Image 1 (cartoon, rainbow, N blue to C red):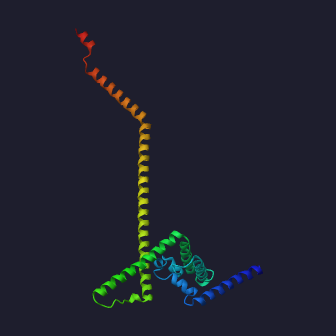
Image 2 (cartoon, rainbow, N blue to C red):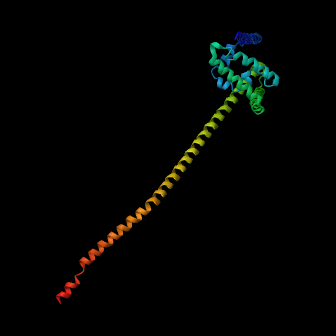
Image 3 (cartoon, rainbow, N blue to C red):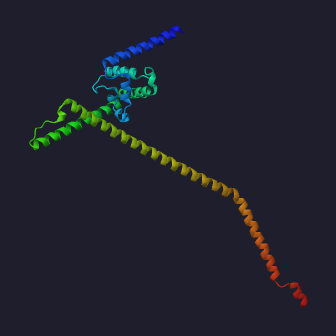
Length: 244
């Protein structure tokens, strides 16, 4: 058991050492800061962009992506954040989800399309603005000419696009869910109706003999009554003959 404990301790120390190295290289982002960043208010929208989650350039190679995932997952791993296990778990899941998303070429392409659309939108707005400034005879310089301001504008627009797509996806999901529910209810209703009709039919057939019997006996009763009445109304022949 000593060996096992030593191995576990060594594993923890190695993890701690790796964490320290990563924190040193990227001093702004300690484990706690990464967890806070990944769970900040609005994270459900911020984290729709997998590149944003992993803080990696969209042009990054697969190798760089893998390396970045390893770094981040070590930083936010629940084992490493014993004082904040639940939040660490959520942060780790966000990192894991983003990484898996970028490993799938189709998902990666969709994310890149959104990023490119955000950039194109900002560039289009800038050229419109420039045209207007030129038309008004004003200098065609604007704050987005500063690469940092431009980057921020693209970031905001991209986030907005990711959010809009997610909202549309959720609306579609809800619509599909309601549609499925409606179809299910219709199926149940049809099934119930068919069942009721079958039961009615079965009941009708089972009681038919009984109904026919009772109808016959009713009719025969009626006949005997009528016959009795008739004989009652006829003058007694015999008596007439006797009278003569």
